[in-house]
Image 1 (cartoon, rainbow, N blue to C red):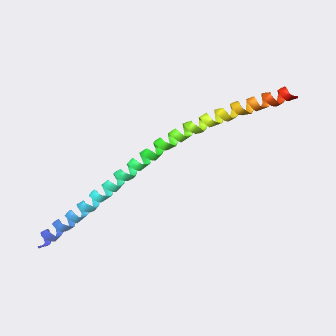
Image 2: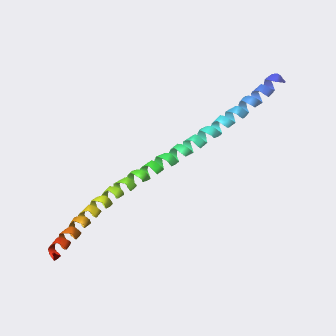
Image 3: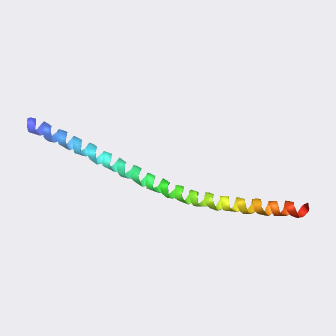
Length: 67
């Protein structure tokens, strides 16, 4: 009887560990996806900064030409 109880507890613990591993894997996948999104956004931000500098330069040139 004691070994049956021990076996049931081991199965319950194994099921818990499996569930924790599944959750860990899901979180890891979400983190990886979010990191990929952040990398793309960082690239887009850099492009926008370059575009803003270009626009500022052109605006400055136009303002200088008016004077």
